[in-house]
Amino acid sequence: GGQSIFWSGGLTPQGDVQMETVQETQDGNMSVLAERKVGSFVGQGSFNLDFLLYALAGFDLSIVSKATLETLRLPPRVLTPFLVFIVVSLMTRRGSQHVLDRYYAKMKTEVDPDPEIDRRKLEAAYANPSMYADKRLFPGTDWEFLKPRSIDIAGFVISVIVCGLMIGLLVFLAGIGS
Image (cartoon, rainbow, N blue to C red; front, side, top):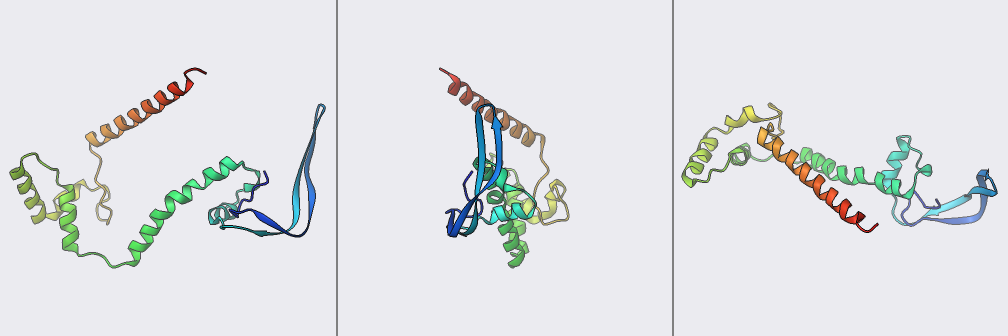
């Protein structure tokens, strides 16, 4: 569509640029001619590394629309920060095991409305940081995800339903008058 894929600022021609016929079709009285510029070009602006990764993976980005190109930018933008966090965490020194045990013991202990009962629960968790080991989703690893309880699953399902209802309401309101 005349848009540069790998460069944010487009391409600047260097020297002679010729037009090459890509496709020519006839549809009734209408003739459609698709051409592209060939020659030497220099990229301007920022280099889109994410599109280079797609091209190396075998995707032909020259046939996709501008909207598809923008959509393809989403996965690298979402995943890159997590990959950076993982790499940095593997390269840095671990925190004190005692501090980590206290932190996760506090995070895994449910809060009780009664301050005295809550304090006793925390003291028991601090005294035995492994008391929640059976609730871990991946025991024996450094991953601190807990197994989902029925209330967690119900809360997630209710949240998805509420989001769906809100989107449905917006679609309904957008359709009024059309």
